[in-house]
Length: 103
Image (cartoon, rainbow, N blue to C red; front, side, top):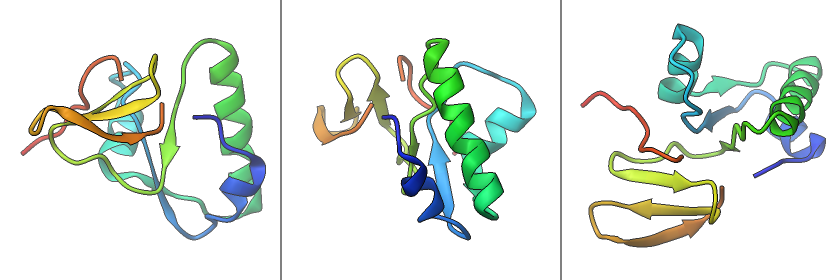
């Protein structure tokens, strides 16, 4: 889901989460696991710009307010969150594979 600049600026000093996008670098793994706090307007603008740059290249970062729970995964093609525990749709948003979480 692409967000507006206002979405990012409304979350300054708040933690946001991102879907696993296939990158296994330490920074991306930490962001998926722990989320990140948007520190100020400059940081909000940077995240907005990076979201759009990656989207243009075909990578959807999918920031959200809540972390997906263990067993939930996001299907970018249908823009839907699924739960493997209950086997049904639990929300509409935009992971070709489940998020990597350690128990």
